[in-house]
Length: 234
Image 1 (cartoon, rainbow, N blue to C red):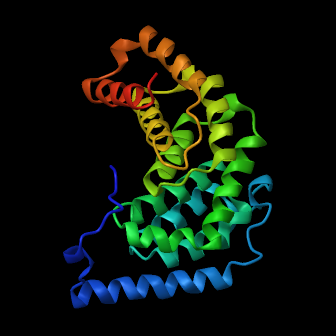
Image 2: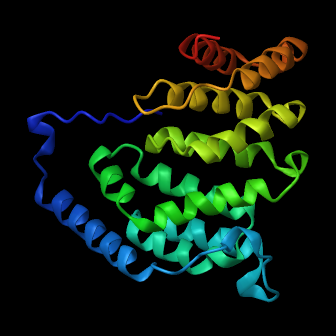
């Protein structure tokens, strides 16, 4: 789902309860910006340590649990705490949860973009994708990452480049929903003012894959895919 960056005058007026919630989020997010400096560097290249606190499924559960209270600052703190032990699935889950939380709030997105922790997370995702074989990357992780970038309206060129390479190399493994979501996100990112050129190789590979597996694509996936091709002018 797309967010709207344009706010009318009436939409900027917050009810007391909503204003209190937003102030709480800002405070928590600001604390994250101060506490996360120096943390998480080199995270993606490390393997998880043994024990309950270092296992990847357990880390995923901590990310999901932290996202349930709708406090993006708290969520970013939890992500930074576990970042050195995260694998690619953890990283994609973390980014996806952040995007879902702030995707419909353009103002909060702006605050998040000023948070150095977000840059650390994005760079860790990029590193993780670069250090593994493309065929070992789960398409769902790719789909989650690129959807998150589009939802947050962030054009991270190095990350998009490696995502394109993974998509082309691993196209046969994509399920219909994963592929249509990925194409939608790439097309949306390509339509932004500071966008990088859309990688035609991804759309060429996708066209062949869809043609050979069209029966696996439902109406919604085909409609999303058609929009992506039209928007990307492919």
